[in-house]
Image 1 (cartoon, helix red, strand yellow):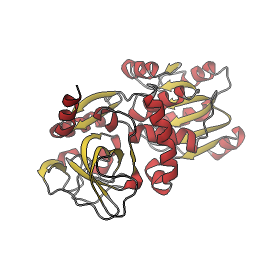
Image 2: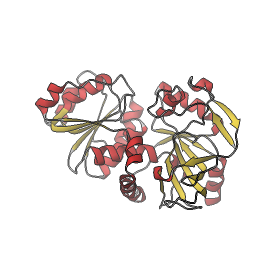
Image 3: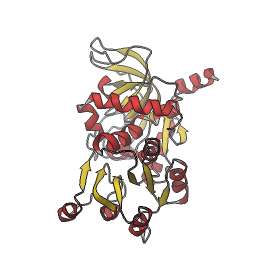
Image 4: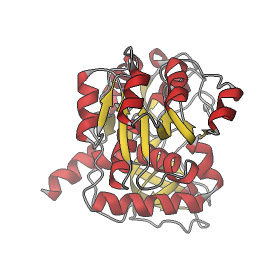
Length: 335
C-alpha cells in the first residue's frame, strides 16, 4: 500500500512517501480502508516526539481515520466488515489502509461525505466531551472559546450553539473571525487585542463567562481567568499559542472557579461508554444539519507534508483532510 513514513523523529522534513505491506489486524483490531484522514496540529508534535502519545519510529503518521471496515479480528464486536466508521489511531492514518482499535472508533449511522467524515471524529468528539462530559455545560450558559478559528474551536462553537449556549468566540484574523461568526458565535473578539477582558465583561453584563474552552495557553489563559464568572469552569485542552499557564490558586479560591484538564485521547480510551453517548448526540445534530466541519481543502497523500507546514504556520482555517482515491471514486459514483 501507499503510505507516508516517518523513519525517525525530526519533524516534517523526515517524512517520505513509501510502499509498505498492508497492516495485519490482531484478534481485537479492525482493518480500515482509509477513505479520508483528518490532519491535526498534534501530528506535528508526534513527528518531533513531543506529543503525549508519540509513536516510536519508524511509523506512519496521522491519527484520524474515516473509511470502511475490510477485515476484523475474531474478538471484535463493535463493527463488522462493510461498516463505515471513524476513529482515532496512535499512528497510521496517512496510508491507504490502517489498523484501528474498535474501542477508539464509532460506526457512522448517517450519510457523510468522506471530507466531513475525515474532519469529524477528533474535533467534534474533543469539543463535545470537553464541554459536556467534563465541563458540565448547560443550556443558557455563556461559553468563551479561546482559539475559535481552529478545527476544535469551530466545532465547539457549532455544538454549543446547537445545544442552547451563548457563545463568545476569540480568535485572530478576519477570516477566522468570520468562520466563528458563521458557526453561531454571538460575539467575536481578538483575544490578543488590548481591552479583550473588558470586552468580554461588557458582553456578559460584567458577570463573566460560565465556561471557557482554552486551546491557546499563555497570556490567553491568564486573560480567561479574569473573564470567568463566579463558580465558572475553565477547560484546558491545549497550548497552541503559548506555554502552559500556571493558574494561581488564590484566584481560583476567590472566584470559586475550577480549572479542568481534558486530554480526550486518554479519556475515551478509558471510557468507551462516553464515546458512544457523545457520538449518538453528535450524529443526531449532524443529521439535522446543525453541525458541519469547515474543510478548507482536501489533499492527496502526496500533499500531506505541505498541509502540515500550513498547520505549523497557523494559517489553516478549520481543517485540512487527506482523501484517498477510493473515496474520490465513491464520491463520483454517488453523483
